[in-house]
Picture 1 (cartoon, rainbow, N blue to C red):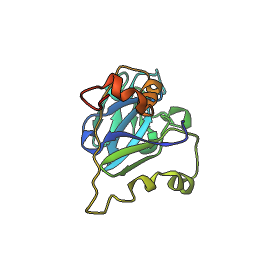
Picture 2: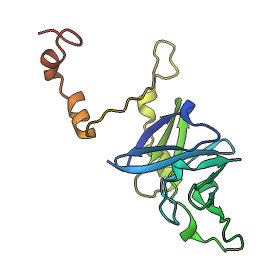
Picture 3: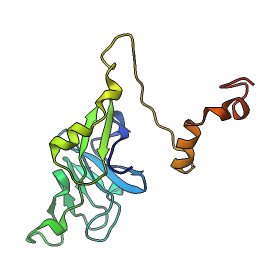
Picture 4: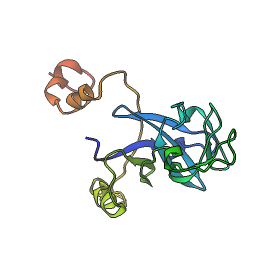
Length: 173
């Protein structure tokens, strides 16, 4: 299930000054914008694992609330206030994930690392093949449900329960 593109949030939900935290398949993610481009990292600072989503965004730089580590594009740690001369190699960077902003949503790939060309091939463009047709429309929305995702998928794939569970609203007996 991980090797897929997931719609993570609506474009309008991503604020210029605050990071946005969400979990997908149990993976905590943090989104923000750097110079207009959506960025995504695992929601854990590489220093002390503090959630980056509770930090702030200043001029497109994601700042950890715990020690102020600053992250730029692709999760690269660009500055550590308590060690300004520190050389910052890969172990200082937050794990970045590929994103795509399309069809009014921000999508994220949480699967294995793949080349850009392969990620592009795997994006589900086919589900939007009618997006430009004036006879069709699409709409994104969100709803947090306090249930296991497997139960929700089973529910949506099981129309036989409709006349019993949803009698009078979605179905008739």
